[in-house]
Length: 309
Image 1: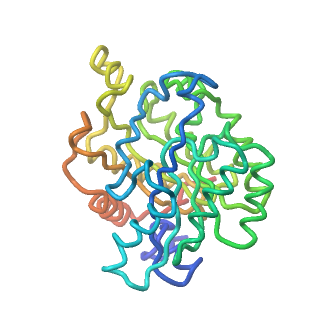
Image 2: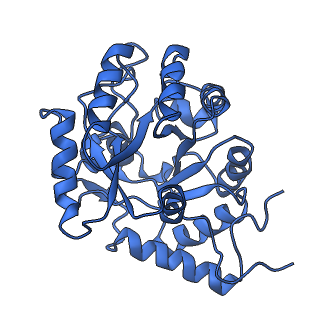
Image 3: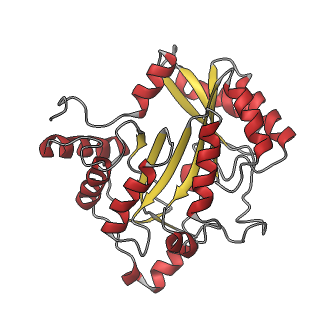
């Protein structure tokens, strides 16, 4: 049985519009967190691919209070879309890695800004205690809350190689405990990590589909300056299989075909600042990659979940 030609995948903007009935923009917040994989609690040096400078917009400054960051972010967008509403996106580092009282204070400060409709909280699977889930469950009863976990890979050998500091079972546990509280769960995955084959990647789609996730972000492996992975690439480039643009688009489509059809796909690619990016440098914007994915799906007459079992 075919599916309507207009449906290729569940996109995030439609998901938000259905939730709120209006256009919604995430405002990135840097609340000054660190990471247990940097301060010695779990490890030091962080994940080998990580340089948080790659996703900090100009209005995002950890030296400014959360409320001010939120208001400045809103001002950045409001002139173009006066009726837009906003989500506070706690993104940089591990945004549940503090005392419960401090977290409550930061989250509530963001929610107090006029026009803010809820929170998106980016964190690690090993940083979600039950006491925080108790609070987030209560918070989700009065506003929108999405918890986004950096899973990165479902393969334990990959997680070890990139110095992630947790295994996949930890991610499964965090996702299931969060979803059981009625809180929407997001997942983040990197496609093309060293050592992973096409078969590994395709199997991953099925594994993720068995988890109670609401949203999913995909992006290509990028080699970023001043990271351990960049140094590893310089020493052993033969151990990396970086995608060409066309290869990546085909891989994404193959992956999406194998995903559960109700998962909301927020992103297919990431775009790092040119001065930090070593490779792959495709020279196009994220929205252009989205259009290429749609075109490929249209040409192949395929859709999200077509091969999901």
